[in-house]
Image 1: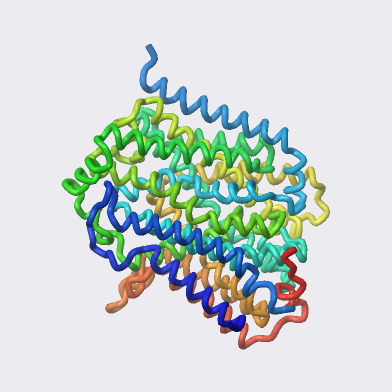
Image 2: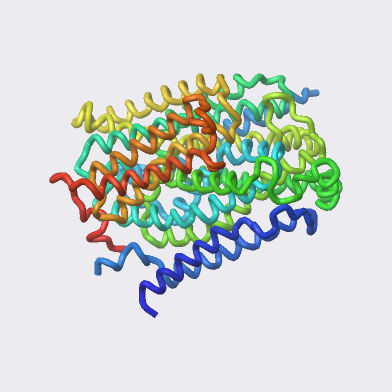
Length: 71
Length: 499
């Protein structure tokens, strides 16, 4: 895979992480699970997923788009 | 037998004095590190950087503004702040922060104004960036004083008036800076942050068990505030969620004490670690703080006028001393974060305004004194302004973040696009600010079917339109002008090394 393709893949990944931190598909949903709204549980889970993906980014792709193009 | 009021004031007062003493001690013990920081030796390590940045979350905006909003409008604020701080800001942390760190390391910058001024060969640009930053820092410091005032009203049920609480934290803030020195002691921020993180979860546990468990609490919500359980509705439109998250995230990146931290990290590893931990840290703090406000609404807790929901709720469901301890802890955390804010603000003032324009050969001692006087004056003025209570905590905070956010896109364009010109960045920054200020200060007017200077255009917050305008102006004017001879176009792109 080319370097630019990898860049685009990360940009898309970040875009998805931002977009679904709010569970838009549960709009108006008021189901409750273990005392908290279901949509809140989604958010908590998503933030944990985000931290894991961010960690992968720091290991695999750090410096991308910032250092390297000049080399 | 001590009265309730004596106990409350005793706990709050004692905690603040201890916090001040710890700050002083910490300063004495770490003075060499602090010296490095002041002299811009890029020596801020992993833990310190992570936690000073974390400490910016420990403000009245989080502890008092957030629960209030959740109490009035529902818990969706957790999502807004989560996507804002946990995801968007983390990405900006990389895009703006890491880039600035590399650029700063290569050329020795300490402030945003200095970096831009050097790149575009313009002392005026440097002063403009510093001036705008100080302008928007004003309402944010004011917000801390408002938060303290409202919290004490809530805690003591109005026995301590609002002005007294606001005045109290002002005195402590000035004392902190003058006694403990101007060199913000990052690890007291850390200690207080961890303390608050622990205490706020303890509060959640305590309230939950006193009120019959989470299930009983959600049943109470379903009965009294059924709209709070369903996602969206009321204040929370998709436009509101997106606008708030975007403007606050970009604003935070331009916030003096955050932006300055981007320059002072010792190594790139520091930035990496913080980046990955951020989303989790954010949820750990915001979830308990805002859920308390939500529960208060379900339980039908009545909040007196001009008071804060958090202490009122805790007074009702936890012992008096615990409620006082939470308020004291929040106030101390706010105080030490304000210290960092004022520190960065004063370095903008002395480095970007005073030295270049007034007295280039001022001695370090003179500069330090000037900065202290400046801080005392600034805090006093924000106190006076806080007495007028121009809006809710969230409104005042939002306005400040929105103002900072207007600078973010021109800065990002300049960082990544070498063809940005001096005229371009001036147009972007001035245009965005002019548009935003007009909307903050000019009352809405109806012209035909259009509302000018209203809160939104086509249902989207004016702050977002201002940001778009600033980006369009920066790119458009840069594309149609040529670089001035004093500009250093390769400043942000060449010679950057991570190691």
